[in-house]
Length: 153
Figure 1 (cartoon, one colour):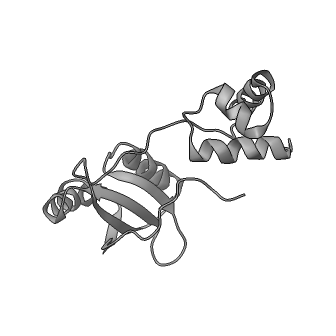
Figure 2 (cartoon, one colour):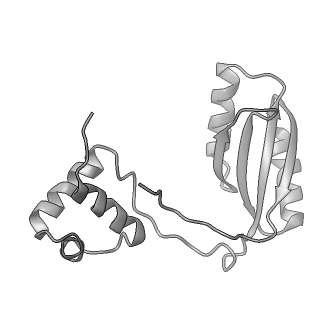
């Protein structure tokens, strides 16, 4: 297993704040020249430390700001059912996050919808059609107090 040095970690921290920096700008922030920073970036990408670069859009402005955490329980769970559920969820654009969880439910979904009516139709026409789905519980977000995209290390 490869270990990252303090410069690698600093590069990752800076990129979590602003991934649009040029290599030259990034190099200045970590006190190196552009060539070694470029080489480190390529290594971090190749080794999977950097999964992808993306823009964070405003869900409210795109009329997708109604956020629901939906806990899903399956009638039973085995490898085939879990793989099938995973495949289905990957194809549902409203589901922005999905976690296999412990406890009385099997999955936790984060869902973005336009409003309550859209979410109701989503439950009836999308989630409700999934085979082996036993029950679900919806938790509606009233206000977002903290939302960070990076990880602390």
